[in-house]
Amino acid sequence: MNLLLRRLGIQNFDSENAIVEVEYQNIDILVRNQSKQAVIIENKIYAGDQDEQLWSYHRRMQVEGYSEIWTTYLTLDGAEPSEQSRKSLPVILLSYEAEIIAWLKDCIPLVAREPGVRESIFQYIELLQKLTSSDQDEIYMSKLKEQIMQGENLFVIADINHAFKSVLADLQFDIWERMMACQESQYPHLGKPEITATKEAVSAYYKKAKNSKFIGLYFPFNFMKGGVYIELNHRLYCGYYCDGEQFPEDRERLFALSREIAPSNRSSGYLFWKYPKVNVNLHVPSNEDLALLRDPETRESIAVSLIDDAHELWQRAHQKLA
Image 1: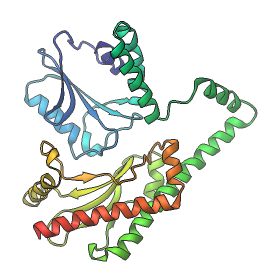
Image 2 (image 1 turned 45 degrees about the vertical axis):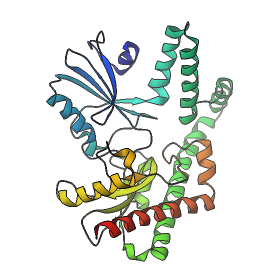
Image 3 (image 1 turned 90 degrees about the vertical axis):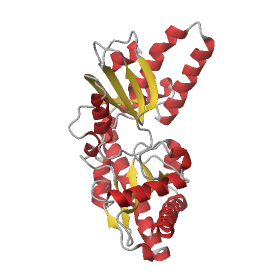
Image 4 (image 1 turned 180 degrees about the horizontal axis):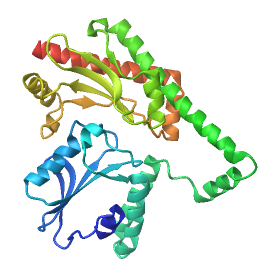
């Protein structure tokens, strides 16, 4: 634990009698002690942020009397949380690609005499390297870097990197266009969606512009407040939305339906959402993801799957709540 705290830059945390809890009050990982110190670790691999999520976790621990609270945001690549989630809260960014893999390697000497634990750590490191596309052979990467440093290659690489991001934006926007075409032809009764997934927004997403995450298509209900959405936070997903502050009764109705659809998520305070069958990382795609994305048929399959899922959620809400 001390090795991880050191990597987080957290000092003077009393780890002597600290306890680690999982899913305490919906907090992914909570480390706390009797000195009223707490470390909140929000683990975000594929799921999106919820409104005021990090802020509410912090306030919850304050209400319980904790005076020193560190909030960390763990993602594959060290991405930042949304402003809606953090509000004015200072957040420590943590990535699997850098800090977690390095921390696991630091832990290996400590478990040298525990073969079972040691092998589990090695396997976990290997899995994370694949998830973060950092499993390239060191000799291969060394030779590749040598080539980049020769002649004009370094300048060409910058152009290639720019072009690569442009290609990713084109591929992603193609999926959005296919979704809109599918909805218009197959489910026109959903109505014209509210669209934030514009070509400009998709381009800004790959430039890591502020507030460029959570773009999508939003289909308001015509029988109650709220609706269904298809949204992007590195991966595409669809679900229900409703502003609980403005429309608490309608949100509660959707929340009850969400519990009915997914009974295993009854402890969650969020409305139902799900990933499509083909689930690719559009932010930092792996080689496997890229192979899928460049295939027009796969992009069509992703688009149709998401629209079908959104329509199914709409139908469920209409049948139960209209």
